Length: 148
Image 1 (spheres, rainbow, N blue to C red):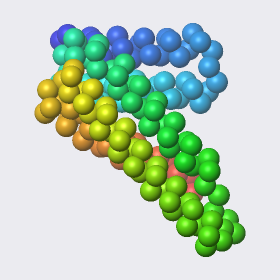
Image 2: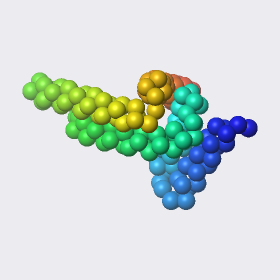
Image 3: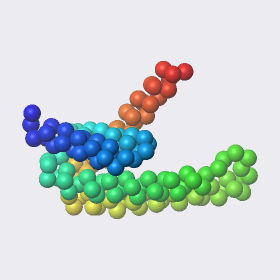
């Protein structure tokens, strides 16, 4: 077993134990497990060294936290049933504001990522992060289709 595999397994175990030990509700444990899967997936795809991973993941997690916060703020304000055209125009403007915030956040964090990793690895992180999400959505879709 090489060092990278040992590191990935150690991180997964740490993430699992941290989630379990804190007695979080089921949703939080699921998020922790999902985060650990994402870390293992991206670490292997991008071939991060142990030193890179130690420096990179805390910054990446902060990026995800800020991105999630922006997304929730926008979604919490989105009610679509019986919406008037005036309200719809306001929501569309809010949507564009959200997308601009998201882009600014991505620009900010790509700069931070490049302070830790070479540009080629940053590009791979962004690509494989999207791929991970697509694969996750496909798995969820397959489960839903099986239940119907």
